[in-house]
Length: 285
Image (cartoon, rainbow, N blue to C red; front, side, top):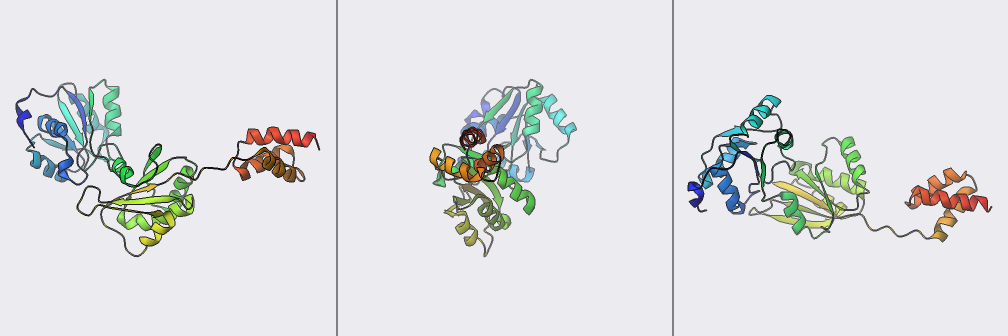
């Protein structure tokens, strides 16, 4: 990578959010390398990890550890420096803030009126979507699922009705139980397990959630993993005849309001539509 930019003028003071490679150093952009080499300070999630990247590009800026456990005092100190210094924020890999530290810092910097610049690049969630062979016109990034089974099931339940592809990060040892929980909560949806993105053993395995849960039941795979789950199947439109039939049966033993509520839930249609029709059917009985 060319270092011709080393003689360029200093960066404008502010916070630079710099995406770094998720496995292949060749994915570091020239602009990211330029920013890291010209920054006055680099905020690193793990300084040992970032040191390897800085050595690769010849960057010598001092590093400060900044992670989920960093306190408010450190954050305030960093924000106070942004008026006079160019500070680069990186995570261990990929785009900062995407299931990585940084949100509180960026929010504080924005509130302080600091200059904030994004230096985009690799992101595991986006990379996985491109190879999963699942719809990408709408997607929701849900990060890591909770580790406890009850909280995990609840989180999945909240996402069950989202009409978009779902993207999760997961660790190898938890992959099987995560896939089992997703299959139980979301049903027979198509999905992909994408592992070791941009690395030597990059792998994308597709199938239904149940099939993938079975595949990874014997041994936990190594590496960092992204799970992509396809959207729910399109609902069949409920005809007026089907609605009337269901309401007539319900009205035999229920009030119009209770019948409408029960039918709306059973047919997965708006309660307002069911109630209006239930009033009409009830009046004509």
